[in-house]
Image (cartoon, rainbow, N blue to C red):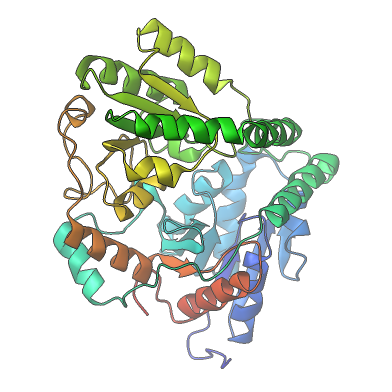
Length: 411
């Protein structure tokens, strides 16, 4: 690669995905003549970086604001790169960056899963700069290449689990090295691992029963709606929605369904496949269904094929899950209850939830196609976080976009 010596920039990396993704991007940027900096906030950050030009912050959260202000001024940072723009450390860093005109780049799992990564300027969901106006989306699509949505790369859930445990457990065991670190996690990592493992085991043991229930729902000949649950600790719930928690969202959806859905319609509530079991969602949903006298019309699913469910669904309700993009790709009616990049008139139902049950409307297909094309060509990278060769592919494209300063713009 040829160093970009004409316009070298100074990149500051904060917390990212638990993978070498950031480290490898940093390697690539340095070969192009840029300077790379890093601030480690906990031992796990250090473990997945292990490069020079790293600063270990061991102070208290309340002192972080002054520290990051001085750091950005002293090092003349031009670009800030991170995952999780709503983490307290990141929120303060983003505020400092905006005051100084520093470019902010955020990343997360892609909207076009399974082998895409989100890589965009400013932030995600309500903070995303991706256009919401249909005409602007069409203009962006016209400048973008037609995406190939067939899977190119396989990710590794095993590697993801191992790296995640290495990060969080090492940060727990070596907490004395970063004694004031304030994690954004709602639950202790050990409880999460035990709960997730138990959940995955139960799902596997009940797989045949779950698939039989899906077939029963489909063969009953009655209309049904699908409500895929998100994770309680997801910032998409905690920040990018008006719900204080997932229980409130479930209650609102079920109450609206009771009073407005066709009397012969069913509601399928499907738990997130990686839910850590901190809350017994089956007990909560079925108790609520009994309270609303909906026991015969509400179906709770833990596992099974979501694609098979969506294929024949009258409509899908989501807060802001990326299942919404999957729903659009299948041409099914969709309503979003939170801030989502795909909450666009013509793609999702624009009326209130109470009306959705009576008149669900399929997305406008030409607009849907333009949306997918614009999305893939601007704020998505092709690749994965946890497995080769998809990791290298994502790193190569990320380095190219950062080096050429083409974030959110088609290359």
